[in-house]
Length: 105
Image (spheres, one colour):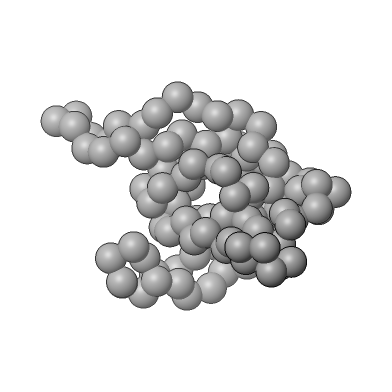
C-alpha cells in the first residue's frame, strides 16, 4: 500500500546527488514534478553520518523516488534545500503506507 495520491498535494524538483568533483558536488538530471506531501516543521534528526542536525521540513514521497543524502531539492516556493537523509518506509505488505521520508535542511 502506498500513500494515497490525494494526499500528495505538493510537487518538488529532485536533483540526485552523484558525488563530489574537483569543482564541488555533482548532481544528476533534474526530476521535476515529484509528487509529495511536504511537512514544513522544524525538528532535530540524525544525518547519514549520525550527527544530530536541524531539519526545516520533510517530504513524504513515493517509495520509488531517488533522493540520496546531499541531493538538491527545489521546493514549491522556489527555495532550494539539501537532503539530510532519505528513509525508506516499506511495510513489505503489512498494509502500512509505503513511502520515502526525505528530511531536508
